[in-house]
Every structure is written in C-alpha cells, then in structure tokens.
Amino acid sequence: MDKIAIIGSGIMAKVVADRARELGIESHCFSFDNSDIACSAVDAFHEVDIFDTDEIIHICKENQIAGVIATTELTILPAAKVASVLGLNGNPVKAAEKITNKYFTREQVKRVKELKQPRFWKYVEGDLPQIDKFPVIVKPIAAGGKRGICVVWSQSELLKAVEGALPFSRAKGVLIEEYLEGGTEYSVESLSYNGQNYIVQITQKDTSGPPHCNELGHHQPAPLSEERRRKVESVISEMLTAVGIENGPCHTEIKIIEGKIYLIEINARPGGDHITHPLTELSTGYPFVSGIIWIALNQFTGHEPINLEKNYAGIYFVTEETADLRTLFDECQKFPWLYAKHQVSEEPSKIMFNDEEGLNYFIYFDKKEKPDIKALMKELEVK
Image: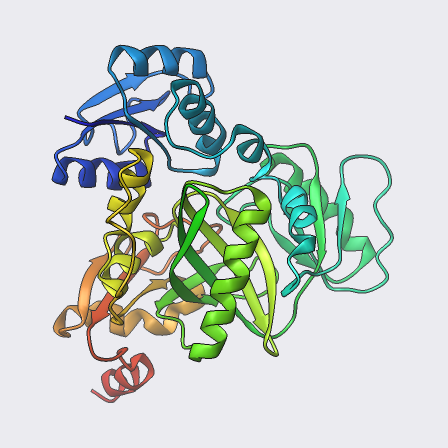
C-alpha cells in the first residue's frame, strides 16, 4: 500500500486524507495540533512541529512514506525539504523558500511578457516610501487568507495600514502596491508535474472591494471567451515556470482589466474557500485532489486533466456584506442545484478574512447552466 505524508492538519489536510482513503492510500498527518480537524481523518497522526523537518523525515523513513503533500502556505517549505531529502516528488527547496514571499514572486515574474504588474514597494523598517499616487494596497510580505490586507487613500493612512499588516507576515516586512481599480478578479487552479503545467480551471471571484477586499463568492467556469481563456492559460503556465514550480498544485490570483492580465499573488498549494474541493472537481469532472496525490507519489502519468467537463459550480458566502442573500440562503434547499449548505449562525456574520468554515454559505452545482441568483431572490421577495 502506498503511503503519503500530509503536512498540516486543517481543512485541506482532511480533504486529502479522505481522498487518500478512497484511493486505498495510507495517510500520515504531521502537525503540532492534535485536536485539529484532520487528526481523526488520517490513518496515523504524528504530533510534531511542522518546521521540525528532521523529525518528520525520520518518521517518514520509518513508515516508508512515498509522497509528501503541503496543504497551506506554512507547509510549502517543510514539504519541499522532506521530499528532497527522501528523494520524492516535490518542488525545489530553493523555490519553496521564496514562493510565499510576495515581493520575491513579483520580481521573478517581471520577465513574463504578457503578465502585467502594479507598481510596488517593499517596506521592512525605517522611512515609508513616498507614494505619488493613491490608492495603494498594503499586504504582509508572506501571509494567506487576505489577512492584514488594507487599501489606503493617503500617506497619512499608510503607516497605520503597515503597522496592521506587519504582525501577520511570516517574512519580515510588507508589500505596498498600486491598487488596481476596475476589472474582475479571478483565480487559476493548476497542477504541475515534472515541470509540465496543466491549467485545470479558472474561477471568477466576487469581492467586497476596498478596504479589505474580502472574497464573497467563487464561480466556475469563469465567463471568459475561448481566446481570453487560452491567453490566461499560456501566461499562467509561463509564470509557474518562472517562479520555479515543478510539482503539485498552485492557486494563482489575477485581475483582468481591459483585456490585460495583472498578477495579484501566487500560492503553491490548493485553493481554499472550497475552490479546489469540491468546486473544481464539480465543474470539470476531474478529481483534482487525487491529482495532487498522484503527483506526490510520482504516479501522475495517465491521470492528466484532459477532456474536462464544462459544468457550473460556485459558492456564495452569506455575510454582513451579502445580507441580501439571507432569504435565498434560508430556502436554498428547495432548489435542485443546491450541492451543500453550511450554517454556523442565525445572522450573517462579519467577515474578517477568508474563513470557509466560520461563515454561512451555500454551494451550487448544475450541468447545464448557472442558477440565476438575482431572479430567484426577486421571486422569493415577492412571495
């Protein structure tokens, strides 16, 4: 029986463990939190600091682990180190060391011709850069889930935003970028295997906009023309190569403004907010999570994502910012397109950062068309 090491014990770790069991693969989870959601889903849990790669390597050798999987930004580097020492499929350690650093990735993709970037500055300590055009967006150099992000409109607001972002960053400093106004945000879900990149799906995002740019919904497939979709696929594939991604999943966020593709950020792990699972699997018919496992085990050949289906899947988060969805959320179980409903509170809650299980949401799925949510809301209001 094949065995995999899952670094981390959160929601995505549980998704991977559940899929491993379906595939007849033994899963071993490594985390310092023995109460986390994945701990009871895996075949074996090892309570160990995820940064103690020597101990993880020792345990993996003892258990004859054949594949290593990262599930969050924090686990990308440990997974790469473990895979490298064990001679298993993974990303190069040098790439993994830098991939979560937003400033580094911006520098690396400068040579991708068709990928545009906002003006950006790195702040570590000392004097703030003098910005000649606002608004700008302030981000921790290395953090996920939209933590610490804020849009500001003046030099006087900049210091407060920087001080608010610094505690969230796992690398010293913050990134200050020109805020890209207009256009539409997307994410791109990809798999790479031995340097070959496969673009599996493109997701359209609903966002709150400034100041915190919270993500309120995701929809697949993104309504792009075939020509534009092919351009996105080509640009993202070139970008993945530029930053050194060779094996595994990547969740890349972009914005398209007047036909031009702008990079927001790169994440060398599965997309959260249920984008990887179940949305990408529902909309394409391809078992994306299984693909992640097959790549880690070096068994991907014959499992490439080709002849993908074109189904409709998406998620709406019901928050204070989307309170108009409340009536539909209360009655969504009446509709055949409902795939899942998740309720944690009676009233819509305030979203502070991406928190897929801490918010009310519903997921839709239909093989023929995307549900007309606005029409359904009007219909329910009349009733």
